[in-house]
Amino acid sequence: MEVTERDFFADRLSEDEVRALAAASSATAMFSAKSPTVKKLGLDPAALSDDEKVQLMAGEPRLIRRPIVVIDGVTHPGATVKSLASVLGG
Image (cartoon, rainbow, N blue to C red; front, side, top):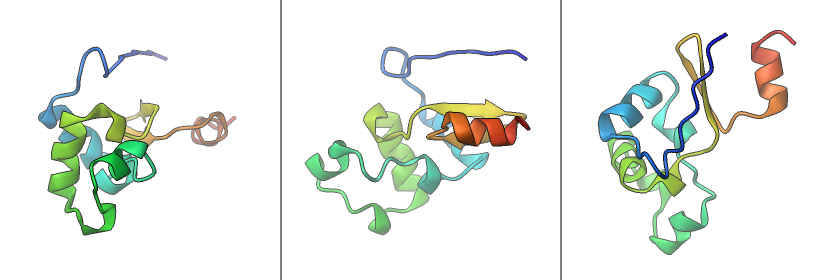
């Protein structure tokens, strides 16, 4: 199994990369609605379109649920050991 790690605070995701990840999951699933940054920016996640969420995540990586794991083309935002074990059949 190939593993690639990326610190997207140091090497930010482009808007196109965020869109591609969101297309394999959803912008809502990737958006960290509980991030303190949401409150700091005065955002209402329920009122944001997917396009707005993608733009915001590309501009502010703290709004992306971490970690993001992609397995067989499916994006798993906010992946946990338990959820990954389930996906990997373990």
